[in-house]
Image 1: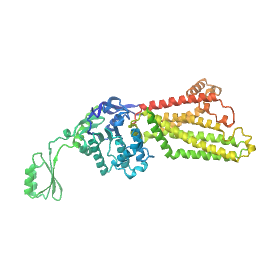
Image 2: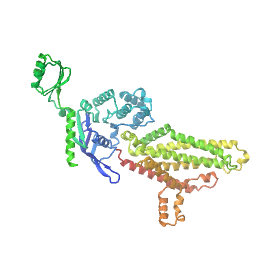
Image 3: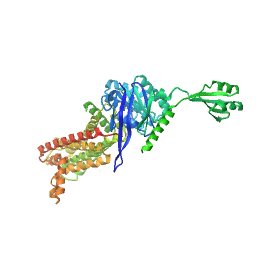
Image 4: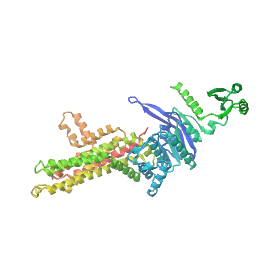
Length: 316
Length: 270
C-alpha cells in the first residue's frame, strides 16, 4: 500500500470579481509515495505546492482527480488520526500556551487524559520548546511558532506527516534540528512529505523528489537517479602557483580562475586528475581542495522548471 | 458528527471567551448600567421596582446581543483570517462537528454571561427590597425577588441562541462586518415581525405589503417570546403563544446550524 497517491489531481480557482474565470493552480498531478520515505516536493514560489498539500488535507476540494493517504480517501476523518500536518506559516490560538494548545489537539486525537501531559511534554521537548511552553503563544517569535507547528504535526505519532515549508522562519540551528527530526521520523517508519524551495534541504534528506512548476509535475524520481553517479569534472583549488605551474594547467584545465594572492580555482575534465596533481606538486603548487562535480539538484531543478516554463509560453 | 468532538471544540470556545476581556467588560458594563438604573429609579417615586426590572432586563438583552454578534460573527471568519483553521481541520474532526462545537461553545459562554448578569440583577433587587419601606412594598404588584423574572431571562437566552445561530451562519461565508450587519438586520426585523405582518395598514403599495408579509413568514419572530413587559407589569403572559414561538425559534436554530454546516462542508480554505 502506498503512503500517498494522487491521480490526475487538478484544482481550478475562480479569479476576478465581476467576471470570474478559472485559474488552474494544479494541473493533473499524479504522484506515488512509498511508505517510510522522505519525499521532497519542490518548486518555485507559486508553483502549486501548498495547493497540492491542501488538497491532500482536504482543506480545499479538487476540481478533478483523486487523492489517497494510506489507502483511504484524503478527506477521511479516521485517516487523519494517522496523519500529521504543518501548514505554511502556521498560526494558532493566541490566548493558549503551547502546552494547552497541544493538550487540546491531543484530546481531538483521543489521547487518554492520563497520558496527555507526558505526550505533550515529550513532543515539546523534541522540538526545543522548553521553559516557554507555559507562555501564551502571542508572545512567541516566528521560529517558536514554527516549532509549535511541527510539534502539533507529530503529536499523534503519525504514519504520514506533511510539512509545508518546514524550515520557514527557522535559524540555521533550528533548520538543522528540523532536518534531524525528519530523519528520526523516517527511522521510526513515518513517511515524511515536505515541500520546499530550499534545494540543499531536499538534497540532504530526500530519497525521492518531485518538482512542480506552474501547477504541473515537471519531474519526479529517486535522488540517486536524478543526481547520478558519473563525475562531470573536478573542482581543484591550488595555492602558491608559479608561472611554470600555470603553464602546465593551460593544456589540461577547462577553466582557470584566480581567486587571490596566488590561489587559483581550476576546472578539470572528468578524466582521472592524479597526473595533473603530481605535475602541479612538482612545480611547487599546493593542493587546497579537490571536489568531484556531479549534477546537483539545483541544476536538475533549474533545467526542469525552465523547460516547463518554456513549454507553457507558446500556449499562453 | 461526533458528540465528543463537539464538546471539545465547545470547551475550547468557552476557554477562549474566558480569556477574552471583551465579554467580561460587557458584563461589567451591564452591572454598572443596572446600578445606574437603581439610582434613576429613586427619582421616579413609586415606580422604582418596575424601572429597575425594565432597565435590568433590557440591559441583559442588549449586552447579550452585543456578545452574541461580536463573538458569533468572528467565530469562523477569525479562524480563517488567522489561518488557525488549517491546523484544526487537519485533526480527526469533521467540519460539521467543528461548526456545531463553535456554536455550542458560544451558547455556553452566553449562558454563563447571562447567568452572571441575572445574579447581579437579583442582588440589586434584594438590596432594593431591604432598603424599601414595607408600606411601599405593599403597593408592588410582584415581589422584588420575583422568580417569574427568570422567565424573560431564559427567553432572552433563547433569542440570543437564535441570534448566535444567525451570526455563525453568516460568518461561514461572509466577512465579519457584513455578518454583523446581516445579523443585526435579522434581529431588528425579528423584533418588528408583527409590524411586517400588518404592513398593508401603513403603506398603499400592495407589492411592498406582499414583500413585508413574505418577510414576516421567512424571518424569525423574536417579539413573540418577549414577555418582559408582561412580567414586569404583572400582566398575564400568553404562555401558549410563547411556547409556539420558542418551538418556532428552535426550528430556525436547527435550520441555521444545518445550513452553516452545509456551507462550511463545501468551503475551500485557500
